[in-house]
Length: 256
Image (tube, rainbow, N blue to C red):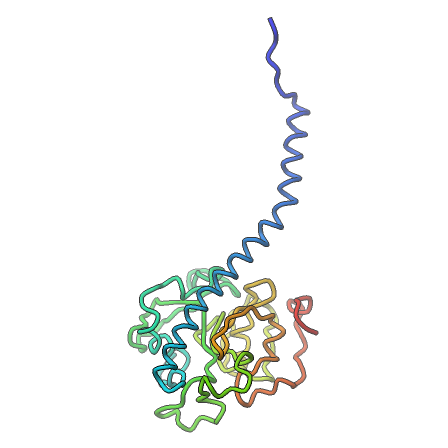
């Protein structure tokens, strides 16, 4: 009678070792593929937002939404102004790597912002997202009509519209980046300070880069170090000295 063949302990250990080695080789590639896929989905969401901005500016003489008063309104009015153009689709509010609110344990740079007050019309407390507007493009109105000429850009007026960000990955509903803003010392600390609001957009969500919509309504991935070379406002000095990069940014691609 012929005995049935079976793996010896040594053979099983060899097979397990080979499988572990293959997984170790494949995991970085699989992780890179997943991150690339998430970045592509993020850009697809931003293209939908770009279409909403196109429809809005076409209807309002090439002007972007107006600045509104009220807590949070200064940054969040786009959420109301664009509602007729984006409908009820909720997925487009989120970068796929930033879907968990910071109030529910989401950690920067992957945390979504949350509305905590009920003073913004249809945007209710508990609503949240992970994109924000470059508030310099807001149209001046009401009590904010004394804003500097850095505001109220028409979408057709910028000399290099593909260098003017209007919307994108953000840890807040928007901000006013300045050329002398400095990067945050660590990438995982939630920082809310209007005097340093470049940090709102300086989110390492896409392997040293972020995704932005530009004034020509194109969407592209931008290295974080390049943020200081974009034309955020009419007064933004793109030739100003770059900040000293903190340790977490020093080794990132895309610049000195």
